Image (cartoon, rainbow, N blue to C red; front, top):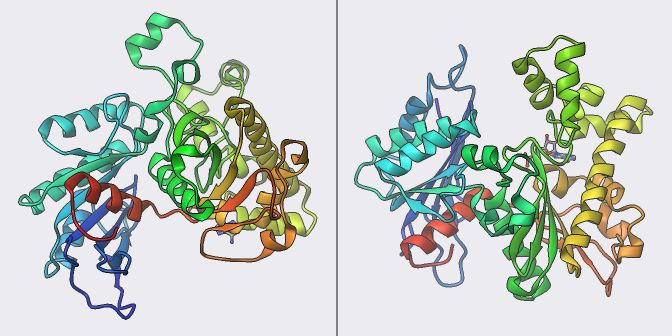
Amino acid sequence: MARGDGEAAGHHGGAGSGGAVLVLNAGSSSVKYRLIAAGTGRNGPQHLVRGQIERIGEPDGEAGDHAEAVGQVVEQLRDRPVTAVAHRVVHGGDRFREPVQIDDATLIAIEELARWAPLHNPAAAAGIRAARTALPQLPQLALFDTAFHATLPPAAFTYAIDRELAQQHGIRRYGFHGISIQYVVGETARLLQRPATQLNMIVLHLGNGASATAVADGASVDTSMGLTPLEGLVMGTRTGDIDPAVAFYLARAAGLNLDEVERQCQKHGGLAGLCGDNDLRAVQSRAVQGDPQAQLALDVYCHRIRKYIGAYHAVLGRLDAVVFTAGVGENSPVVRAGSLTGLQPLGITVDHALNDTRGSTARLISPIGSPVAVCVVPTDEERAIAQQTAAKLGLAGNW
Ligand code: AMP
């Protein structure tokens, strides 16, 4: 059963003049969906329906497979006017640099790109197939997490491995979280009342997955995730950066096969590997109670972020803003303060009273007049997808 909420929010339930976009975000075992209608006049977009179908394919799951899940969503929205369907796709390789309208060739390409996103791209492809079957009359678009990073220069996206091998297999840094980061760059520009194209910033997307991105004049110029979303920052269950020789050593010395080594890096690393908890809330509360493993996990997590801030400050030269977003970035004053400790020489300081104040809107947490603005900017992937879809299709209204 789809678990969705119609949102009253004091608005009427129909689509505005620009229509309504159904956003489908298919993960490995879930489908998140949201129906967003254009706002009119001074009103912003209306989030008409949102929900999530979970544990897809599991014995007690809400759907047997992704096709069935999408079928449930379509059934739930049967009486709603929908103008277009937009699908989030994790890996677009170097082929997809902007939102595309989906045809058979696009779908095949998305499935081929599953070699680098084996959990995510097949789920997205299954969702696309099901939505095209159920809603054949509607335009269907794909939006890619990698696309915002299409501006990375060769020096940043090239790995120092054998050139021919890299070319043959498409091995390079692609970067992820792009839909979120692009949205956050726009919202930060709005907060600072300056054009995004004139801002240099470091965006720290800290959720279950975590990444740091250097943005110069509004464009991505370096990012911590690589060929896959495993590289870079410490995450809930992913190691982030690690000496590749650790994998060779584990294979030889501990007798792990390749799949077991990968599982260690993807599922048993990160905060979970360090202290047994992958949710930062649990790690924080254990650390406060004096648990040394949890404290070390927190220290490693923040140290890695601080290191990337220093590196990307050097990449950018001039830095206007450091921006925190996603579950941890938006909600953890401890991580924000811990990651920025000792960065005063770079012009980066935090006002602790502002940092400790909870909020749900974009806000500054650096002292007034600081050389670098430190910002907390809530992300909204589904809204970002609707905005980009509306722009691509030329839909009227406020998105
Ligand atoms: P996301 O992937 O953006 O949904 O982020 C999920 C992660 O955000 C969770 O695993 C938590 O670790 C973290 N998180 C959510 N709320 C809080 C909070 N109030 N304090 C610290 N961490 C939080």
